[in-house]
Image 1 (cartoon, rainbow, N blue to C red):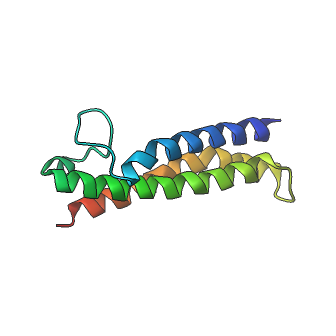
Image 2: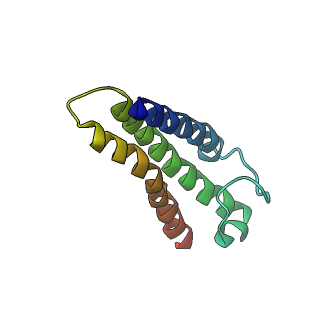
Length: 110
């Protein structure tokens, strides 16, 4: 039961991230103070805003789809021990740091 609830929670978070990242990937978000990849480099020009946000959106989409797969692994009973599935479900959300870090390093490029 715990694994199913944890997996379902991760699934919902992943879906929200994917839906939120899609407009960024498509370059539909104009510079603003609320929504988007908000590094100081993003605000140096409109072109930088769109370049960095498209990259960041794509990176978050990749993370979101991988989180969907992990959520299914956590929810569906399998040969993977429940304890391992629980740890995976608990720790995987922290891996969102990876696309954020990659996007920041990308933003630093000229």
